[in-house]
Image (cartoon, rainbow, N blue to C red; front, side, top):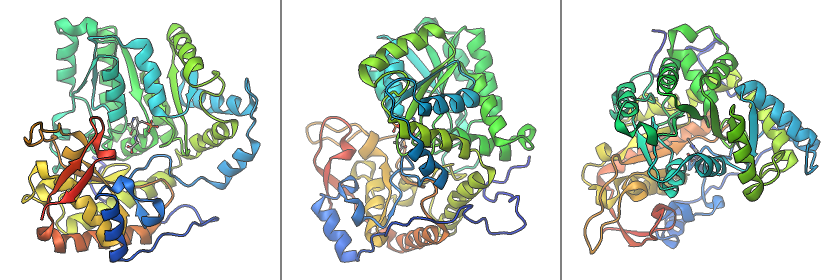
Length: 471
Ligand code: F0G
């Protein structure tokens, strides 16, 4: 096996994997004091989503839409053709995505969840079941809104957070076949594989697993779709960890993965290298027509979706740049570097490090804070208080079920904190700074307190809930 859980073999002759770009335009970072940060968080009732960006020094809330664009992308922006129908920008976008994915119909949307909404509208009906390795929150919510049941069939290695394995994003093939072979088979409109598996810790899916899903879908005559937001990061891990792909170009791995499926949804705010954008793509003519009919009602004409011409052009360029091996190596290395530091300090993390983020296991790290007092939230607040670094809780605050009449919440399966790296935005010294914040976190770990909610909305409470530390 060519795979090593932490170290990646660099193609370069140096130990240091440098950022494979230089900086042309800079934005100042907010440098704040501990007193400022406490005041900001108190003002926002201890909810990190309430902070203004100028109050955050290193923003690791998400890897979505926040990547710095290249000079070629900015040049593409100037080329943007804003014709309502059939613009040059659309033609470039369509050509790049057609070549990359091989799908017959490319349908632009303003972001991933708009593609999901259209997909749910045209393919999903009440009572349907949609199997996946893991559904992302918005995907799940869109299928649930169509009164269907999304089911996660993550492989058993993926369920074990702290033990490393090469492809922890895989689907459990036995469970998938059991479902396809059950009396529920007619309720399944398609199988959806998320690459990489964001909900499962940014873990990759092997080509072997994707091929086996294709075989099962053929056997049971089901459509096979990809949620391919991080298709290039997935291909990078395949090139590092799957023996038969070690000499294959990243772009070729990517093309092969898309061609195993019958269509995809993509949020182009991730591996599209864009600030905004999405796509829905199919081979099937009738589905594409149905999708375009909804698109015209909700997003726009089929040659722009919800995007400007300049967005389409920047994305077309981004989709060419994203499969650069040097970039992907630097990206994976940034995250695994942070993971090595966290492990050195004794912080329990999802292992191995994911493609776009480091995930801390707050349940293991803070055993003195029970799930209904939100250990992940406590950790995320402390990371901000120590160094102005913004992370996100993915635990009981985000996914638990609120307890009624003063009862405790039903906890989420895991209590994670995600530190997601925006693409091409931060340098090695920024990651060193984040590592130092984590080191200080360990010193304070036993003093951390749980939180209680003082206000919460009914849906998606973590975005706007008000909290206070339990004294
Ligand atoms: N699918 C996956 C796997 C995602 O990670 C996301 C977004 C979406 C779909 C929805 O795309 O935001 O363009 O509508 N993930 C972001 C995150 C928000 O922070 O993980 P979108």
